Length: 215
Ligand code: HEC
Ligand code: HEC
Image (cartoon, rainbow, N blue to C red; front, side):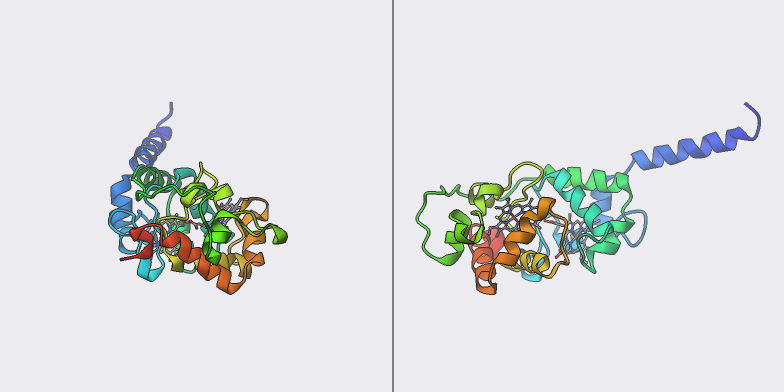
């Protein structure tokens, strides 16, 4: 090897060592190496529980694959949000991997599993458990699981989120600022809901836990 290569080899080694060392707690609590990747804790809470009153979502216990997809969607503007877009774009891939794996390992809030056959009287419960098939709206629990606990890496939990956050997402799909869902599954559903239905179904899932109801 000639003399020229040695510093380069050293540099490559230093880069690979530093990229492997993304510490999830440091990223979460202090932010990424790029100062634009602000600390998550100030908005998403010390344990990733979110801040219901401000509409900042819960991240704890969500699938790492789902969380990483959202960060990528913010970065590519398929999901438009003025707060999260610059943060997601500033996180390195290693930092995003580390912080999402750490968040996914945290517990979800406990919730009673409500059967689809349960009595559904008010409009939120009817949409959640029965849907509105005459308008091609499947019941939410068909994809999001019983009580909206989430299913696998594709269908995020609705329970544990605040009504404010849930309705903001449904409105974002209606307005086309969130268009990151596979096959327009959620876009179609959100556009078929009235404003009152959005309020009712968001309140239904939020009120299944204390965390979502936000005190
Ligand atoms: C200044 C406040 C703020 C900070 C700091 C912040 N976030 Fe967010 N985050 C938000 C808001 C607001 C939303 C909801 C955006 C929307 O409505 O689309 C959000 C949404 C998200 C989502 C989507 C959750 C879901 O259920 O789809 C992820 C993932 C996320 N943030 C990760 C992070 C990570 C990781 C960090 C730290 C590197 C971070 N956020 C820092 C405010 C913040
Ligand atoms: C056919 C399957 C399907 C059905 C039925 C469905 N969803 Fe979804 N929903 C999804 C998928 C897939 C996503 C994740 C999209 C993505 O990748 O960002 C999602 C995401 C969401 C989110 C965003 C959660 C977050 O953390 O940001 C909300 C809110 C939501 N759905 C509400 C509802 C409501 C309310 C209903 C019932 C009226 C419903 N969904 C029915 C497939 C479905």
